Figure 1 (cartoon, rainbow, N blue to C red):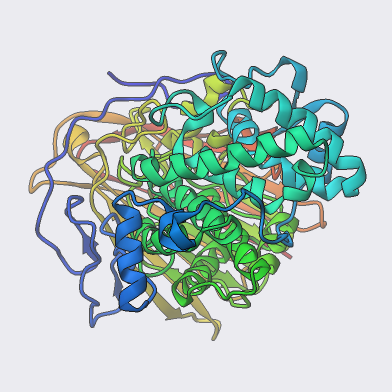
Figure 2 (cartoon, rainbow, N blue to C red; figure 1 turned 180 degrees about the horizontal axis):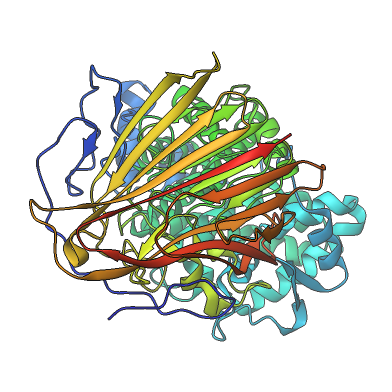
Length: 624
């Protein structure tokens, strides 16, 4: 079943691409075989080998003595921590052993809204009194996560002193405990008891204990009992997590409880071993998470920074492997920042504000540069004077890792200084705030990204619940530095994918050439026969360039170009170098740094092309 993926602010239906055969052969510069989740051997040529075959970070559990290994094994087998820690197995009174110093940034606006009686999520306000904390009446996924992970505690702490914030936190906590008096028998019994939300909730409760344990004694005793019960529940169910990042959140909660609750040493030893293993399965060797999502990258950093705070509260250092993972996670995230410091819009994410990214990096304590060549994560970055180019040169994430998987292969974003010129729509993960839920699948479609589509179909099938189907399985990439006639250099990126090969017999190849002074980006989109002989007939094509929110666009009289005016007074020109098809300016949508939709425009070059192939050249150039 096909789909109309031309972008408009309305709901779309995704296409169901037919299954493609999995190849086990590897050519130079090509990654194939999605079943093998390991990185290929380093090539001696300049070709880059990214793609679906992401390597797993191989970390071992923290080195411990024989006695501690026996304790870890006994706890894993179900021996209570009190029997392994205290004399004669006497259980200690439940209390917190230390107070955590929170260094993670919160949203003052969201915290102020909570004090006023509302949850503020991506611009949408929901009265706290109307939230069903039991989860019987399902709410939108973003609100669901905020409510049940208790991430709102960080926002509340950011907007007011403890004396003012604690009564508000306790009222919301009391309502939540009333709706969730005890853990269920197994995970998945409503959003409150997914492993990801439960692990994050436990870590947030422990990190923000002064906000929820400063009031009446009865509530304090009840909350501490629930904290202990939640930790025991996670001990049993953490490996049943919904995905890799959720499992990491579960292990973080377990380790935090092992650090801050009495008789916690066995739990900590057990949790550290599980956490290190889960982190190794979450990310590739270059530090990019397997979901390829910058939002997931930020969440992983935040979880580990919070856990580090728990270690420091108990005057311990986090295991070296945990510190190493934080160091690995930061450079790939920075690779997706533009000149304004905000993120590019990839894999369900939106243009997260630069201030939020900077605050998280500061909390991480990692000082580093953006990773230019994130080979396994699959994003190429070129920084040329004031211009930044981001290029998606990998298949979408595999279904097991996808949260809001997008068919964005060979899409690009381009910015100059503080202004974004070409963007992707982004924001699928914010659906349910001001972005309507019905747009979520459309925002994941190929047409919502600045790349080429054939027959209004996705290059990879976009399925429900954030899943990705069949489509792109191979991406070939080549990166070179070329001398120019002017004496300067230019960076040339060339990549191709096979997402349309089975359906239309065509391979999409894109070549991008960015001058080192950042003033000119040349592009060429080629459709090449996938077999020895091209198919007959024609197929519709569209090459889309979604424009940044501050770009003022006007078509030229000949219909082959457009003037692009930026707020800083600079003027750019877009020109199409192909005689095939027509160029139009259409409405589009861009999700801003707070997850809110903004009306924008897009340049579309579209028409019919022979199934024997075609070439579409274009240029974006700064005019003096």
